[in-house]
Image (cartoon, rainbow, N blue to C red; front, side):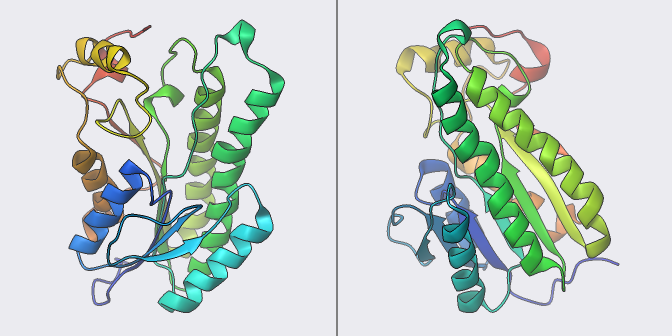
Length: 241
């Protein structure tokens, strides 16, 4: 049956203190959601509540999710935008670095998504896991990051298959280069601009808008999908810089 539109959505955003997470929070607040930001540090001043969390620690995630559910009364939406990037050529990539990235990006996503799903079982929900273009294409120096984000996308497909019967939709948002956040330097930014058919990087509000769309009633039959917001670069041109 269709999702209900008669109630104010109660939403969680992890990584909400970052540039993209903050833009997502703004988009959710603009549509009228009650929002809790989950991050290691407080966000910029907004109408969102803040609860600290360390997504590498299961106990911290458990506590934060419980506090968020108590504050909101229920959880309808999770947008998981927390993550880290470490760059190294494949032959220089250390096991410690690889493990650190997987711990945050892949296991962190698993911890947060599993606990949020448990809070949604009784009434349904909408989950968006933010990955990256790097989970879809090969870019030099991004081995650990790409592996973690590709893993998150695979996890989301399984979640969608298993949780759909509980009216929980799970989708993946895969941005390309964005005008804030992890883009490392101006030279790298220009490389993405030149490789992208749209001849620019994404604006934060564009990515946040798609995150909001995927958790809206308009996307009520969208489930198990990876939605790229990359100006076409992942499907049209090869990028190696």
